[in-house]
Structures are given as C-alpha cells and as structure tokens.
Length: 430
Ligand code: SAM
Ligand code: SF4
Image (cartoon, rainbow, N blue to C red; front, side, top):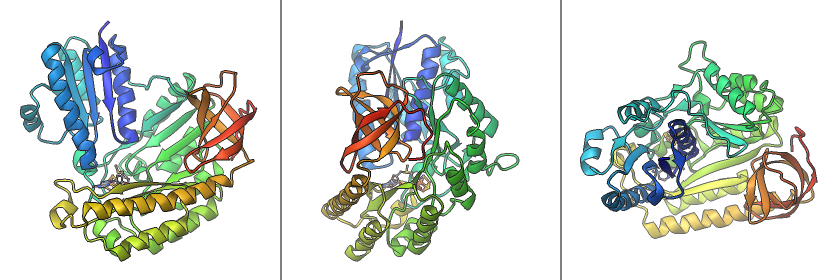
C-alpha cells in the first residue's frame, strides 16, 4: 500500500487543512507513514507568518531534495502560505517539488490526483476521528490587511462556507463520535457577510447547538473591531458554546495600533473586554502580542505591559515583529528595533504573563471542572476544560473521548492537574 507523510507547521487552519488532505489520501488507498523516509507522497503544509517559520520550510525543502535523489519516485506536494501567486517562479526555484496548490484549494489537489491516476474521492475530506475534537474552517482569507501581516496576500480575500454545508459536516462528524468542534477563520466575526441572507457566526452557533451528539462548540479568531453584542449574547445563552475567546490586541499603545492598522484604540479594546466580562462572567480570554514593531519605543512597550497587567488574560501568545516582504509595514517602515531589544521585550512579556496565568490558575484549585479527554501522555489522561485549560489526571479506566468531571489539585501557568470525580457527561458551565 502506498504511504503518505504530511508535515504541518503554523496555525490551526493549517492543521485543519492537513486533516482534510489526510482524508483525501486515505480515500485513494494511501496509508499514513511515520516519517519522510517511509513515504511515497510527502505533503508540506507551510507557514510564512514569520521568518523563523519560512526558514523551517526552506530547510525541509532542502532535506527533501536529498531524499528525492535516493527515492526518485517520491512525490513532493507543497501547500500553505509558502505558496504565493508566482507559481511558475516557485516551480523554477524548487524543481524537485511535483505539485503546488494554494491553501485550501482542494479542487486543484483533486484534479492533480486524477492526472496521477490515483483519484481522491470528492467529499472524502472529513477529518479522521483520531480525536474527539475537530477543526472546521468556516471562512477562508482575510480582508483586513493589518500592516505587518502576510496572510491576506497568501490566503486571499474572505470567502465564507455556506451555513448548510458546515451544519451537514458537523452532523456527520458528531455521528462519527466527534464531541467538540472549533470553527476556524482569520476573522470569524466576518463569517457570512458575503453569503445570501447574510447569516452570521451567532446564527451558525445557534444552528450547531441543536446537533444532538455534539457537546461543545468553540471558534477562533475574533477581531476586536468586529465582534458583536449578538455574538456575546450567544456565548452567554447557548449551553454548548464554550466560554473562551481569542481576542488579539497586538499592542497596548495607540500609535503602534494605528501603524499596525488594527482599527481600534486601547480604550475601545478595554471597553470591549469590560463588556465581554460583564456579559459572560466565566469567560477565559487569550490574546496575541507583537513586540518590537517598527518604531516601538521603550515607553510604548511599557504601555503594552500595563495593558497586560490590567486585562489579566488567561493566555498570551507573544511574537517578535518579523518583516514580511510585500506587506504595508515592510514597504513603509524600517525594522529598527534591534533584535536584542525584541528578545528582551519578549522575555518581559513572558515573565509578566506567567505570573498572571499562575495566579488565575491557582484560583481553580479545589474546583470541579468538565474535561473532554483528548488522549494520554506519559501515563496520564489529558484534555481541556470549556475555558480551554489543559488538564492532566490519572485513571485506570479508558477515558478517551469522554466528558469527565475533574477536581483540580496542582496548578501551573500552563496546565492543571486533578483527579476524576465521576464520569461526568454533564454540561456544567465551568
Ligand atoms: N487574525 C488574527 C488577528 O487578527 O490577530 C491573527 C492571525 S495571525 C495568522 C497570528 C498571529 O501572528 C498574529 O496575531 C500576530 O500576533 C502574529 N503575526 C502576524 N504577522 C506577524 C509578523 N509579521 N511578525 C510577528 N508576528 C506576526
Ligand atoms: Fe492578519 Fe490582521 Fe487578517 Fe489577522 S486580521 S489574519 S493579523 S491581516
């Protein structure tokens, strides 16, 4: 049986698309390999959000060049944000790559499979159920053009999937044992605006709440300038919708936010967080921060630290600014914050946030929380709470895929440890 290996880096969208590519390959009779060396087809699902990611892609392409000399029949496919509009240029630069397709463009992939005589089955792209959780892309692309970001140039403008198509897919997954879905988009708040009747994310959540076998629904990422009161009310009122929001602020200084073209001020963001916490008091909040954006002074960076101290997010994803060719910031600003300052700022945010997360998580000690068990590692089961906290616990019974009530004991900034109280299956909003 021919074998495939999919190498994935980057965001949840890439992970979701890799699951779908695996579905297609399975449908054509391929089986998963454990490494590049064992495979007949290799798919690289790539990311170029920062230079460090792009360098990994280039390194892996170099490695595969060597492998192809030994295994001349090896097919190399590449997708994800490394694939830009200059396909011919990429083919010339990487002649050992057999096929390139734009992120999410599965029709191209299917046509290629037909040309190769190993046709993938149309519609066979449902993620395989190795986990009780599935990622569902609901909107592709982004119309925002934040000045630093390459995504709109690589993933194109926003296109929403029809509501009915998403509901059918989720129903099918739920029948196969999926308990939790995460709806994905670069800006899920834009969902539906280009569809007939203009359904929005709140409408979609409402529909998905009536899928019987499904226990939980999540979504990411929200944009602070677009999130609606209607959506917050849905989170508050719909039992299956988890109390967790990914709400990237990026910086705590108005001049930097303007240069980033984010479309909100610090004050507007602050008001939004107050509204969110008022409407959904149990909400857990994550955010993204970029340090060392062009021109960021020490004082402007201090504003970001103050905002983090004030907002007390559950989780902060931190990145040092990386200039991306073709973006507005790359054209208009000099990358003038020295690397050592970027690293220092990154460390300061990490230190501050680990104290905040540690404090927030320590308050969960003694609480009973519902955990959806995703797997086991080093003899312990692990899963996530509705608030997206990672929980580990020991139990001799097979808990895979179950909703379990766990009493929290030890906590750290990154994870919680606990013990099973009962086998749950409850819908407790904790
Ligand atoms: N759509 C989301 C939003 O509005 O923030 C984020 C999507 S982006 C793929 C994920 C994160 O990568 C961003 O939140 C940002 O913090 C980071 N990022 C994007 N471009 C970057 C760059 N040029 N340098 C450093 N970090 C970057
Ligand atoms: Fe990039 Fe901004 Fe779109 Fe997020 S909203 S994907 S940061 S352009």
